[in-house]
Length: 528
Image 1 (tube, helix red, strand yellow):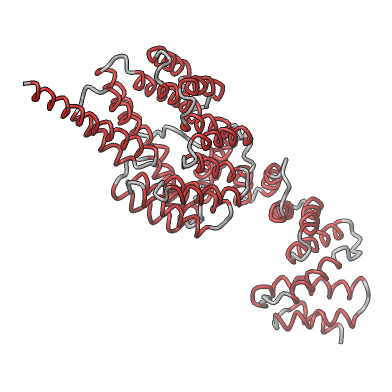
Image 2: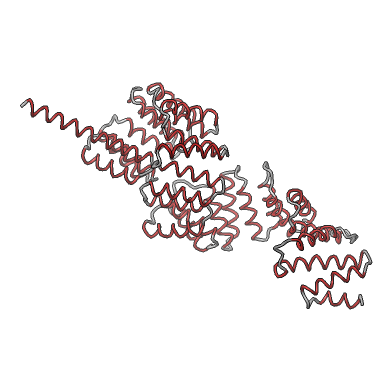
């Protein structure tokens, strides 16, 4: 009898150990974003041990990570039915509340969970800190309070130090973030998550070499840790190494569960890597398998706009908004507005782009979207003003000045246009088109003053010089602009400089490019 009891005890211990190992594998699967694998593990654990409330929490967490809020709430509540004092499931409900903007409810749930754990369960405190760091409007002050308490309980746990470092990372406090990542590595020099976070930190700091070194170190420790490749891909994207970026993300996808969710992420990365057609094609394949996720239609709308499939893009964005998405981004309104403008729904388009600006006044690129919309509507002065707003507080590029100058030109604000192109030339003095626009502007300004003093001559001269010196010059493409410049020069030497011989050379040049030009023929007949 004693042997039988002993054998039963050994068997029970073995089963418990196996279940504990399975739970650790499930938690690991969540960390490495293999959500389908994690879901199967915890569903199996619930079937074999329905009395363990923790398994319901982790299954709910999987669904929350996949943005399936209803299923997440269902399993958190199921866990509380099994054990009303399950602090983890209470944390889960608090996280849902915080992410939805119900801060008071979240605080109450978190305090209740922490009270139940009585400061003995560091994971309860850790997960509260992570929720405050990652979700909703974020609450970094309370995150640090809970994570500090977790650190007191587990002073030798690198996971806690990385979580504290993440709080500082989200606040763009790089020095404190790297300090805590390094503390984690002092405890465990092979803690791959700390290297990944360090690489992410250096990516944000625009330090390519340090970021790359951190990611390569992480790969040398655990080449099968998927988040490395996602973050490495972000680094390559920042460096405009688009092919490498997509390859990194493809590796990331291969190491995750290849679910629809991971494929959607891959489609997003293709989009960010400017492979818009490939992104669109993949999303359309995803839609055939699952059309219930609003994020699919967001990305399809974005990609369709970029490949100029405006009807498909507008249909996708309308579908997206009709699904009552849990989160609406400024870019959602911006892309909807741009698609509406391209579809001749001008007023609606402007309204939606302005909504995007109301949501994020700091995103200067949204003013560029507004400017483009106004330009499409031929509201050139409004377009120019929006472009001016785009460059406030930043160092404008030559491209910025081009769009400003062009908008003012078509809006007949020639002095302002000329100023913009002068600024462009100060940055890039070999940009022939800028000299052409300066010529046009000054010709108009000169005519309006009734002086006709040849203000435009030096600018057309420079345009001709740069155009003819360009090895890519093609008279079929550039001929019309050259004819414009030659026409001005011919008229200048005929009417202002009274140099008929030089004038004749320009009119002859026009006929070389356009043999049927009537004005050139008429002037040359007078110069015989």
